[in-house]
Length: 432
Image (cartoon, rainbow, N blue to C red; front, side, top):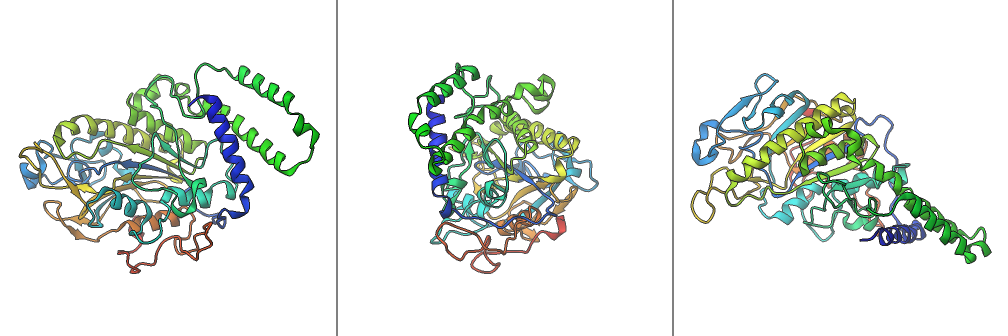
């Protein structure tokens, strides 16, 4: 997409939304005493293995652990994680591990919908957590950021419509590009070859030719278009926000010079700038075949990027107000498929898996729930997606039992009532 096309799309898309202002949902303002202001969601696209990350089972044997059968003590007494994550082991005081996540679904699309909305599919498509946060903490609540309130690095998850019935206004802004490459070209914001001075000169020329606008001063619709134009040109400031080089080589090296590591750094910059919801779409975890060969590359990336993110947020005083949510749509099968064609693969597994939460009111250094000796069944305190999302909403000052404004005017709740066709083990008070 050329910069001209992106600018045009931004101006007229925003204008259309402005003209339809009366039809968009408007949420009530959040209470002033909310603990969390932002969320960084590390979405493990495809589903990570709980045994190979935060719920190791060293006594289960090689048919379950393969070459990743060692556990490692963390900096919190009594908590161990997989030895492949040594840096995260030194950050365990900052995060809580949920070892009893469950929903029982093994299909990517349905599981993704359940984990990100807290609901099971029915006749309506409900918004994911990012879209709900954009509704309750976005433009209608005074958000004045230079980028949209819901950002995905770098491409949408693609399993379902993130905004659901809320409509296009609440879809995530996907940056595109690759933050580990130079420069990080963000679609519609960062473009090569057209300096700011030239773009502004083009703007002045357009204004000079705008005889209709001069002939109709005070026209309400033209005023709205002018406001949209100002917002679009304000994206030049966003270009500086997405310039990772201002962080310096040392900081960039700390995160890891790969797509995930630099996405973690970019996510920190975005929440530091006040963006309410950032998703890092970390692809590559759907490891049906040659799982352990892939883990040799992926686990060190995860370990370095996520551990640095947690430490960096803490050092900057941002962790207390930023929820970091790690997890995928499900886990991977505890028992390894050694035979052909899998050659050491793990399959989809929604019966028992892990999530990790940190910051924003969640207490670190804790473990909630447990799986059995081989990680195949929930043994203690089942936790369902409804429970986790509801707890995050409460920390963000969003009433999970309150009304969900929507353009259809339907009487809907932010989350379903527990037992209303959606299983629940209750809010995660043990981690607050």
